[in-house]
Length: 620
Image (cartoon, rainbow, N blue to C red; front, side):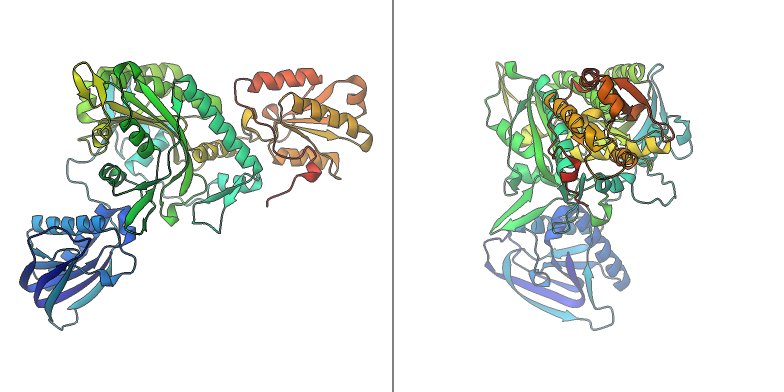
């Protein structure tokens, strides 16, 4: 927002002619004496956080008004202050909100109408503070007393809840849950750390890197990284199909002229990609909600169809994160979000589905070998009514995983949901990476006119939002951060075998072993195992070190003994240490059987690289 503030003897205006974007109003003329006149241009970037922009503008106007000791304020829309204007709808709302808040604070406010050609007269006081220009940056809304959430540690056995604060936070003994609690309470560790290790790993392992020719926070993905992403996408697809979901695909761009879409977008707390095309204001989606809701609106839903699940791998979703917040794969502007929405007849059915989907989300941690920490968030009304249900879930969670949970209680509903669970991985710097989530949405069905036709009439259903893993990029982030934590503990870092781009590397000792080694690699590939042959002109020891740098789970060295005996010497990374590699002797069939047993229930894709290492290009 751009603002020109003029301390005036008076401001007088008269609206002369209406434009296509003019607001309907009867206030076509006005005058205010001894006033602060605020000429305002609402800009496109203000659409990312209009409420924050209003707060910033009011704060600046109050500051100047107090300096000048004036109580009369004129709000005057003035597009000429900027060449990058917001949509008319956003501008009108922002100007009206500024007017409303200033009036609530006791100021006498006159607002000139938006979108009219106006004649005006102004008399400037002419002292050093009489003409001021300001660039308004969006600010966070201050929470009113009693409006803050409270956080609790639970004892599911006794149903005791202990309110958490900075003084007693260390009653949490689980280090990962403690890190999550500190983040939620805004407790900072006061320590400077380098960038997260995964930022280095994604480059070293030829996974991905920043695309300098794009907007910040957008990545280029190399063959190995693309393979990992595709395998994770296949994994989630198989999971949701088993849950009874129906895959769909929807657009990535939406018209904010649709009232339901605008309202839903404005309620979303994160910044968004918004832009204009002619007279239309459009946005890039931040999740698959819009398309799936519009699809459900057009369906003739009957109770027997429910719970009805639609799923989409939203490639891509967009959030206009602040540049200073962009950190590797943890926070980026373009990402891939597995997004499932479940239509439920009523709250009872929604709670049953919530519970099922919560356990499925937790299972992804087992399959990915990631340690999860859990926080439930409920409005006070919902928690008070369903306390027994919640403690049942938390007790079962404690019994299965041996971990406590954190509970956030919101004094009143301010989002579309009344309850949700967020599941996080803690990175090597002790900060949470938000991954799976399930949310109980009680608002969107009515907003998007989604109805279920029952014998008693039409009803608005409850909708669950679920991302079983969180964004694909954050899953990879969590896996790489776990690898860094393992390295700090003296373990060799690696990915799960089913996600490792190269699962087996075969190394011939000399030229005479080459053909035999090549046949082994070919047999492994025929058995749907990703293997390659290191035929480069390096020493065997260097080839083994290179395989270690690539975190390859299994390394097979072929020499005279292996050719004569038919027994392979296999180095197993998971059982090795930095000081001592762990080796086993096994036949090729035994090696194949071992890999199949380890990866059999997970998706497979072939290695998209040449079979010979000498032909594999490097991207860094």
